[in-house]
Image (cartoon, rainbow, N blue to C red; front, side):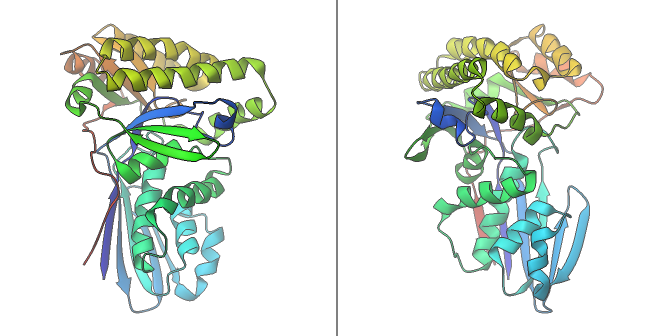
Length: 335
């Protein structure tokens, strides 16, 4: 039997960091706005009849194997730790070869590991006979990934891989709800340029410092989180209204708030890239994920995306991403 799955990562337009439990509970109306990106994470499982488990990452060029009888040891395995822990969670009863691959650059701030988690969960769940309803996938992914990064995981990253397209994620005391936003995706593609700085980042470290300050009751941080909440609300309303001027204004106003929240969210190289993009047709910038490296998304003046991308492409080590909005989320097939 061969099982194949794919899931897209995301670009977060507004509301990041407020999606970490329990921070959003202190800010009623907390939301995040993001869209799924066509740089899919993929998982392929081929069953074996020799009682062995082979785990392989194509993009990381790492592979190892073990006996099915030693599956409990995968809970402590540090090679391909996320995949190992997911296999340990599902505990298949047949041997198999799992191959994973992610098209998103490592440490890009695009939620690539979360997309990979959803892709692997979809495939492993099929392997064990659809043990869990798809509605459980987000919680499984967040809980397992938290044991890998060893800090609380935000929840927004799991919804684009599961559902695709453009989303507003609402965080409430009675649970988390995804709202599908009816947005002109063609216009979104025309207006957004995304570059990878070549500098990977560790989102867990950045978010953990903010998390601790919030739990400790830092009043300045509370005020900044209120601003993050309001920015996400404004971006949601503007996208629904197809009001790109308001999207641009909100993103510009949110950028200094993010810098105050985490001064190391940008590196000197990232600051230079933002300045260059703004000088060549960009209206606003959004550092993807927790920053400190990774990707930057730019909202461009109509007709200027190519100008922005051309200006960024000449920078050493910078990669301009070729992407589309992924309108479909998790896909699992079996043959």
